[in-house]
Image: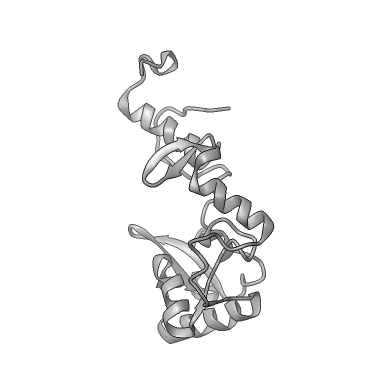
Length: 169
């Protein structure tokens, strides 16, 4: 597209700019695997659902009951006592398969599962940490020595290595 503001930027810098526009500035998002303006993205839909505390269309699976905060606490206790740390990507599946309840982060006011699992209402139960190549949910006591998960809108998230910093301010 020959965008003049990208002229002279390396491929790495362009990728970093796009990642910042997605993860921190909410200028871009994803829809069906494509990068689109944020207001047309799935992330925006989830954020609007979370504001209204409604499940997203994909979250409601027919007649499956949605988990309340009390049910989330019960299920998480059971999951973490049974096997210790759990990959973040398995949490919703475990709620469905073991407890026959749908864990909908948007119906509980969060647009991301990782944010829901860091909510103060369950902070005494679990913590989310980066381990290897993915995020893992630990029992709160086992995760205490680790550093907390960076917030997407805060400082540290994407590209935490050295080199030049590109700002989208």
